[in-house]
Length: 345
Image (tube, rainbow, N blue to C red):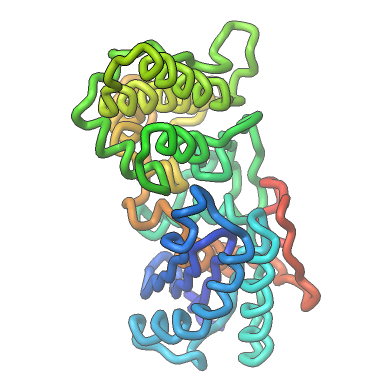
């Protein structure tokens, strides 16, 4: 295998069919097909629809990624695939496809953790990750704060959401405000015209006796819904920008404070933020302000690499190959609840 292997990555944990090609830390292509429009009228991802969409999109998306990279399947040195966590049916489509390609090509297969891949993707833009680092992952299904001594084999969970993930809360609040699904981008846009101090929404799990790094957004979501209902019941016109900005500020305040606290408590001076919510403009701005004040180096991938994609899976696969990690067994399966401390299987 070449010193810098060419890794083909498969991502199908939710509603995005992502195929990426990475050589070392260089991204060659990142092809994506989404079934998001098919889920919009349901206000959330429908697992069966997502699985069927992956089946239809898989081969064309692989061909597009190869064409964009200017390589052939014969050039591929290893295959990586998200084997968990995620939607079981969606994961199975990706795992089955990746196993088929690896077997046909005679190359090693690496089943990787979706969350660790969100950390690894930052290396495609900012180079090798400082180790140890603190990573904060915020998406529709996950909100986690991690200690990363070694991305190829040692990722430790410090805190996580105890109920709704940040992205899930964005989706639910967007529904309350009659904004499109997924809720992150429209709330971010509306908030630009709003006052983040207009409404004092609660900050969950921020008391002195609360867990230092766990987060909770279910109560915040409920508080927003009740506030909007009360205004409507009293015949008061609701300012969508003000609600969006105040809600967003509450989420961002909690996340960034806990992430920087984790850096301080563990003596770590690098923070990487990943996941779909990392594309949020306010989260990026506040994180930068707080990291600068704390003397912490902040690393956040470009917005296109924050959401689910094949590049992140290929990036982690490349890291595993170069670190000499053993490939997965041929009977690799999907694990919808794969714990974060299992980087590869």
